Image (tube, rainbow over the protein chains, first blue to last red):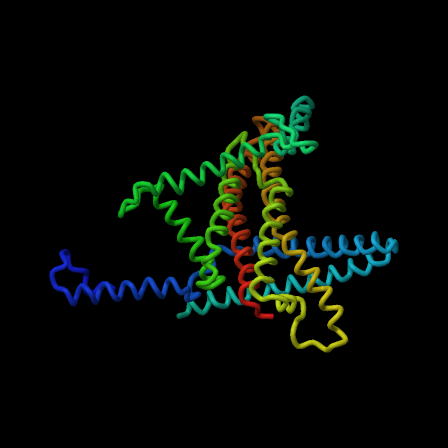
Length: 115
Length: 251
């Protein structure tokens, strides 16, 4: 980048074009999204909060679905109980996904740090 | 001492979340009054518009302060969308950018004393999350047709386990907007309530002991600014992740 500063006036054509071409190339690789960027702030506190909301939301949605089915069929506690457990399972599925993502991101950051 | 404690107890930490009607309006039987919440949403929209339109009107090659902020926020969101969804996701960049800037403006405006934090009401955050959820689901079906239903069928499973997993995946999918809304709302409300409770301690403990909660408040205020940014970021990046799921299905 620094070995040839761009000429002040566009006097020498080929050199100028070369610089321009390289710059366009740089912008284009940036545009394409190499994924080599840091993923922004992801704190441990944020992760903990994400996991806890994941539990609350999945169990809540499960319970609501169960209550909805019960309301339609008139079998009050049956489906609610079943769907609470299904909601818990969904919560674990979601949490696993979040943690896998977090794992991938931190590992990527470490690789980048070593390189 | 007792009088002081009473004064502290009287300060209601939830008072800041009260909705006040500023202009009464009715639409049929629907109450569409202009409230303090609406007012702060309008202020947030005006602030973002002013930042992006006015500061970019100069279009200086060497940006000033305001132009730098506008350009940095553009670059930040554009980079995020590009990283998560790839170049084809850039079509939805205006939506993500609007969402991010609106939430960020609401969160930051809420940090001004005596202001109202729009995002500390779950109905507001849930409305935004529902818009994202419905939009992404419609987009998924438009892009993939009925194939989008494969979202709910994880690969590599024995057949007898499938019905169970489909239901679990369905719950997991439906819980997306709830987590999105809950996280933003809970973070904002918890933080602001904590600030008010701490402030109540300062009054209650008086000149002798009030300095400790006062010092804690300084720290919490700094943390709140971080959270204001972080939650806007999390909301936007999760929207990008859901968008990416709809655009390119991996499951």
